[in-house]
Image 1: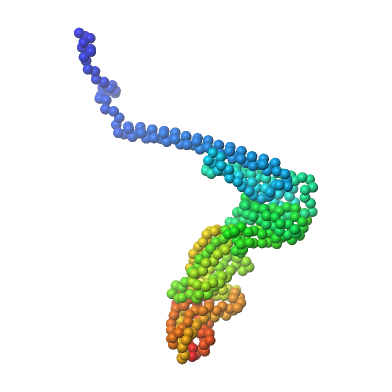
Image 2: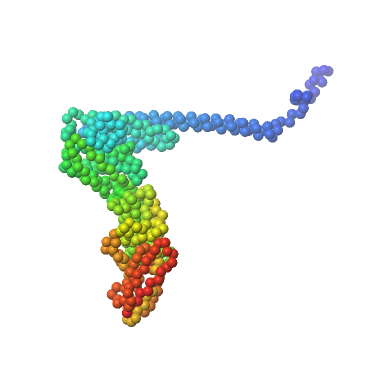
Length: 441
């Protein structure tokens, strides 16, 4: 009977705790949130550790492949006969397991004790070829490129010790060295082209017969500081010495400038523009003639500090212009903000002119009467400057015209003046619009 009672008895689970038994009601909401937060932190940490390990493994693999490619390239250079070694910079892309590696090889002459490059060894003769091979790959994640270097000595008697050398250094607008720029040196029966090395922007032409040489750059779409697309420098080579030549070189820039007047005057169609930068030789300015109110100026060196600009070529057209005694024409005036443009890029700008209210009348006759503005010669415009403003066909007329800053004589060529031709001063600091009355008989 006892066993039957045991078999039919219903059991209930009882949870014992502090203070006796209580019902099993599960976790509270707060306990659940805390548990999930701890679990998330643990999983997040584990995932981060796994990702870091995978990245490290991938970087180690990529670096190992890059080291092999660099060593392979170095071995191929060592196996060349000395006469077949090409100076300068070269590179090739190699794809391994879907990863593209770039192998850069720089070969240049250096002195035995050189710590930099051959362009820095002015006055000394090079003795060995330094070969540097650098391998890089995408997503390096702060890993340093693989680099290896060696020196190769030329065979005894390969070169005449009485010859000279030319080192050519090329830098961009920020004075950073430019690699892979083709440099051509010609003269004294010599004609060779080689590229600058990536690290130093240097191309070294060693063991040249004494004489005169021309060093030329000619990368399409690039210009020097003067906007020259194919810049050339003349160099003299003397026995036993190295001569250094330097170029600033970058992708050419373009400025689209619009001539405008805040007073609503119509700009003269043929007004020239002046751009200024201290890097422009000889005087820091360059004049650009043209037609129309919108001008596109190309082949500009992209100076980091940009260009200031104004209309006209005479000295007082410049808001900060100086007269022959060194005094400013316009006290308190300032040029407009500089126009900056990136290498290979373009920029737009508005060139501000002054406004003149031009009135016209004639005593008799008919036909078109063109009106021009004439500026007297000065230190910046040796022949003066003449701009066509407009033309009047009736007995009277009135028109707002725009003029570069400065003092102008307003005339009607081929007509007889009823009164002396008037003059007008266009002051960049004056917001008033002057009136000019032109009268012909």
